Length: 380
Ligand SMILES: NC(=O)c1ccc[n+]([C@@H]2O[C@H](COP(=O)([O-])OP(=O)(O)OC[C@H]3O[C@@H](n4cnc5c(N)ncnc54)[C@H](O)[C@@H]3O)[C@@H](O)[C@H]2O)c1
Image (cartoon, rainbow, N blue to C red; front, side, top):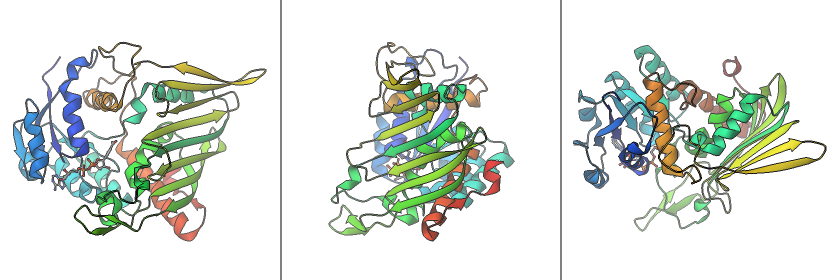
């Protein structure tokens, strides 16, 4: 194994800590030819930085990301900060000569995403965007089946990512509930790449969209005894048409913070005339495959630990969220080193721009109550 890739994190919140966890048990990976080393962390919140003192190997604890970016012994930066800060910090990472694993949605809106993508191209930096669910064994199997053509002519596709904790009106608000920090697209910015990544990778690009957006609670507790205005979209249902194999196929994308009974449910379903596939994290080890025979039936397969990068974990065990993040990082580092092979790669800047194009059209559709055609450049 070559010398480690030196990684730093900007934004030591929920996601920043997950990186430390994924790297801390890197030895569990059996066939990843690249090894990361977490060398530095930056956050404006001292308490968030403090947590990283328990992580072996971290030597830089900065409260100003410019100080971190000036350090020469940092190769890759992972940035997990609120969306209004994406563009400025991502651009500075790139201009400091570092590669970037960006968090979704890759800029607060379409214009920002395009500027980040274009600057990465101009500077020749390696940039990918965080989206971990496709690295689940069930999602991989569904993706491979969809790629294989075995489904036959597609009849419909549904991709969903569903939360329910916001149903509680007493839940304290954070920056994700305010447009100025989360973006006009609201829940689409927050949960959207999770649903758009696989269809876009499969080339299933919507050519038109009709959106239904809901904003349910206008304010929430602010955690300090007061109330905070909440002006983002909570739920989004996008009824799109995708051109797949020259045919118009209904493709539904659902992103919801208020979906009763759903904790963190990611669903990918594609039904064709010959076969169909359904995978949901509600049944994390179960792959459903529909077959049309003389009778029509669903075949249920119990999946094990068939992750893209092999690990020490026994094949019959179940993977979870920390495993996915580790797999996604392995794919990022392997692709950066040119050794990904035929494994699934992380979401690209072009895919992130394409998903923002969808959200821009969805916002327009909801505002005008129309079916919006996607810009021509999206389906070239
Ligand atoms: N891939 C996923 O599954 C997933 C899940 C949750 C969030 N996210 C994304 O991760 C990003 C962060 O979300 P989160 O839930 O971790 O948020 P968070 O609020 O838990 O953490 C954000 C951190 O950024 C810090 N921060 C703010 N301004 C900063 C600055 N100028 N310099 C350095 N640090 C700064 C905050 O103090 C905070 O600790 C967002 O883009 C979000 O969409 C991705």
